[in-house]
Amino acid sequence: MQHRKSTVLLLSAALSILLCACAGSKPAENPKTDIDHAENTDDTENTDNTGNAGNASEGTEDTDAAAHSNDDAANGSAEALATIPEEYHKEINGITFDMSIEMPQNIGPDALLKSTITLQVPDKDKALQAIAPQKEKKEEENGTGNGEGGKEFATYRCTFADESTLSTDLVLLYNTPFFDNVWDAFRVEKTSKFNADKYSQTQPLNFMAPEDAFENIKKMINNSGYTIEGMDYSWYALDAATMEQEEMQMGKSGEILEGAGRDWSSEDDCYYFWIEQTHGGIPVYFGDENFPEDSTENRPIQAVYSTRGLEHLMVYNVYGFTPLDETYQLKEFDAAAECVASKYGDILTGADYKVTRAKLYLMPRKDISGNYEVKLAWLFEVHESGKDSETGEDFENVLFTFVDAETGEDIPL
Image 1: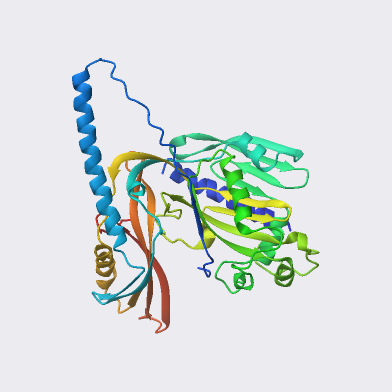
Image 2: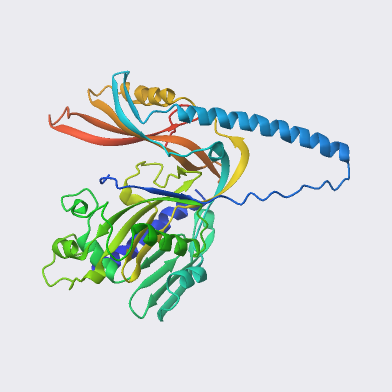
């Protein structure tokens, strides 16, 4: 199944190219789990090298005043979040809002502190130790890649004796040969070959609970050079019997290949995890900001865990957060909805627009100086339908748009 290995390598290369530009830059839902770890808040006493007690006292008063102001702003934003309903039904400027609003259940004032962020990348040596400590290396290749502004980064690829592979650059990617078989049997993309609905998202497999498998995956990730404080995940239980029935081997051009497939057994039972990073309970947007969408299959962390252990892991577009003494000033949800209504209600094509969903994200963006800023933003899903004026045929499109949750204004892409 050489075509699968080639596809995975091409995916890794494509992600590296995408992240080079950014680095300096639904299937049915199953129950999700959000795991956040308390940040280290050990206080350190500040010292004044001048020995000027009066200045130190004034500085403390200024700091206290700023802290109280920040607390007031945080509480105000938290109160605004608390008023946001789970559903929203309105007609504004000819646009129908018949929608669900996806909000984390537990957001405190601390989660609304603004942050500076940096893109996290894997550590080769740590990844080898965390993921494949006992595997015999067959071939290794070290190199360099060029990022934004010509900045170089290290690249590494290892092929093990069992034909598993591990690569690190701006992306961490690990695959065993079995992952090719998973791809042959599990298809989540919404095409004519979609079959994810054949697998359970609620019934655990016998060999391990999904929560325990996820804990093992999370530990491997954070031992591979990453520090991710929170993760939200969903999973599919891929049982061997269903995979045997659904196996479909395809060539490089998408053609179906004839021939014997895998000799499946209960040892092949596995979970497929789709994972997104969270910060303070709020999910971190991971998609291309120029073509926004947040489909499950595009989540930045994906993993397959079987009775044998880890079979696949991909990690990219995750960030490290450093909090600032500023707080997001959240506007009421109506302001964001009115922005969407204005954007699509003024389009004179005769199409109908129905807003079906909004989700709150922390959205990393690069400013003109090359540094990241993080916006608190609503991602709206909008369904467009109508009749083509030239062909007369009916059409339907799914559109996505971001609105700044602080200003209520459209975020230009």
